[in-house]
Length: 288
Image (tube, rainbow, N blue to C red; front, top):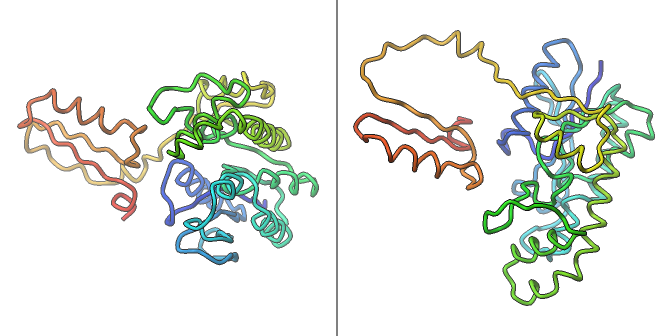
């Protein structure tokens, strides 16, 4: 079967949960004999728009780059770029025409375009969406305020506008957040409509599934498939003999505060330092 995977980022340009999931899925499907193509966005070192194939093995990559210089763009351009992008849409249509997939699995739409499922629907191709985070109900994906508090809901776009203006850091912008609420309501309507076009959903947890059911997603078309870890390569590795009584803890992941690395450090400080070792590896370190 010809399968297309769609993600907002992909290794090695970006290493995160969605990226690793998509990468592993592409390898697994290819190993089963499927023809896999991945459509993703990579803005690294890009100013001019770029697109095209990277003929890797065992699957192929279609990379699309940003069509403008983000460092010189105004806040409105950056906001709309997170969910609407005509250049990405045209590139995706060329990708579909080239690949002619029999199935499309969306991993994310952030920084791509919410119109992508519409093009797949027009071709009559079945689709699936894996919901990895809160992006389809929160423009920041995290449901967390800038000060670290958990967001309890949108309140008609008011909370989204307050959160966005607070992140902007400008006192003047903060004062106009009520006027921006309708814009965030429209954004929420657009992303929800895109998800409903796809129609079939997978969540890595019952908790996340429940979050989206409360948003109106249909329970009958919503499955839970927990994220797993391929341990075969670990089992094949030699077991080193234990030469001491040290407790060794290793963290692999992004150094983002919401990941809770600081909590791990604080917990380790409560143990005798001569009996513990903590190793932290982030993006480029554990990739290499």
